[in-house]
Length: 82
Image 1 (cartoon, rainbow, N blue to C red):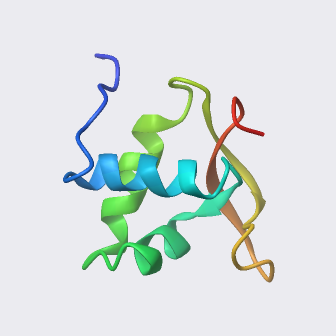
Image 2 (tube, rainbow, N blue to C red):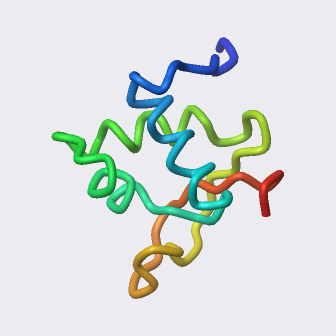
Image 3 (tube, rainbow, N blue to C red):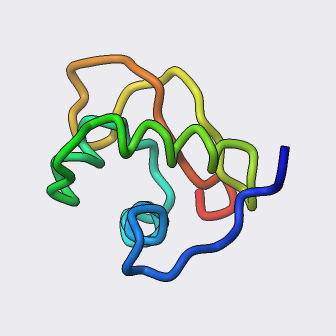
């Protein structure tokens, strides 16, 4: 399995990375990523966050979402920024 490559900000992956960076690396769930980036399909965020998990300081884990604290789900954060 190949390593996840950096993407320009015009791609969904690039937009998700930029969002996490703008939020100082806090945990954000796929639903909030989908909402914030106005993605048409929630699965788009899921595919990218799964690929980013474990790469370049990103971690995917079960935790409370920093944007919507009322649920627990899989989230992506950047440990290097926290």
